[in-house]
Structures are given as C-alpha cells and as structure tokens.
Image (cartoon, rainbow, N blue to C red; front, top):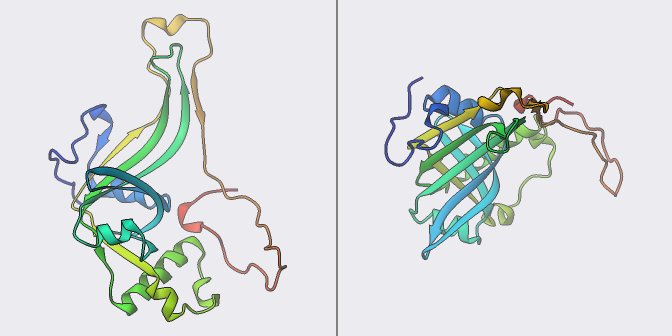
Amino acid sequence: MSDFAKNDRNRVRRGHKRAVYDEETVYRILDSHFLCHVAFEMDGQPHILPTSYWREDNRLYWHGSSASRMIKHLSSGAPASVCVTQLDGLVLARSAFNTSANYRSVVCFGVPELVTDDAEFDRQMRLFFDQIAPARWGQLRPMTAQERKATGLLVMEIEDASAKVRDGGPGDGEEADWPIWAGHVDIRTVTGAAHVAPEGEKAPLNHKVLPAYHWAR
C-alpha cells in the first residue's frame, strides 16, 4: 500500500506529529466501525450528518432515503468529507491543559455518486450486512422494488485522506511531581446482550453480530 499525498485539503496542521497518511492505517481505522459523519455544504450552510457506512477497496458507501437532502445534494456532484472516530481512552494528566483522550480518527475527501445499477445496489447491501451480521442477508424478507426505489446508495472514491492517532499516557512536564494520580483509562466499544423483539422469537439467532469489528463482550 502507498500513502495519500499530503495537500492543503488533507494536511493535519494541529498536532501534526500524530498525523498518518498511509493507506493501511486509514483503511484499518475505517474498518473498525460502521458509523461515520458526512459533512457537506448546501446553499452556504454547512451540514454534518451521522450515518452507517462501509468500505470496499478505496471506496466508501453509505445509504439513506432517496428523498433526503443529503442523498439528492451529494448525488449532484457536490464534494463531501467523511469522518470516522474511535475513542480509545481518557488521559488524566496532572494539569487541565494536558488532560486529553486517546483516539483513532480518519477524514476522507471525495465526490460521491449515486449507485444506479440494481445488481450493484444489491451486492453492496449484501456486503454491508455480511459485515454487521454475516449470513443474515439471505434470511431477510427480500427487498421490494419500492424499498429499493426509496433508498439512495452513494459511493465515494477516496481522493484524499489523513488519519490522526493518539495513544499512551499524559505528557506532564514540570508538574510531574504534583501529588495527584495521572495516567490513562482504556475505553472500549463492546457488544452486549441480544434482546428479542416484542412479537417474540420466531427463529433463533443463528449468526454472529458485528464480528468484523473485533468488539468483545
């Protein structure tokens, strides 16, 4: 894998020592979650919206209502940026100034397009479900033509990207002898118990949930 070229759009200026531009790190962070925030400008107003996403090669995919402003606007050739962040810990320093957090984050830039081919639409939706719940797609009630029409699927080639990573403890300096506990506390995303729908259990849960993200119970 290679690096994303640094330019005025993706260059990390604050905390640049924590910046990473190689594709392997960017992809690994992107593949660690399925929730992102999509930012774009419309009529001079900035917008940022949370949504689920997935990656295939150097492309990001996300979907929403075909009638939504985001889908309509971004399928018209407007640029977007996509941010993914994983919170890994709280850094408790001996001063408020040095108190921080451990995290992994990525910001990607590109121009989304609408996926219009039905076969590719179905393939991508299956790919997404295989990541969050392997083997579930084949058990679901088949998607209707109206549901497909009501769903807009966007794909964005990642033109530029940069990652920013912080780990470890606090960087206390002169106050290192101040009499207060200092260090970092891990924060992890975990999967919890499965709760049956109100109408009852019609069949057993016979597939894994979220195994691709390596979240432990």
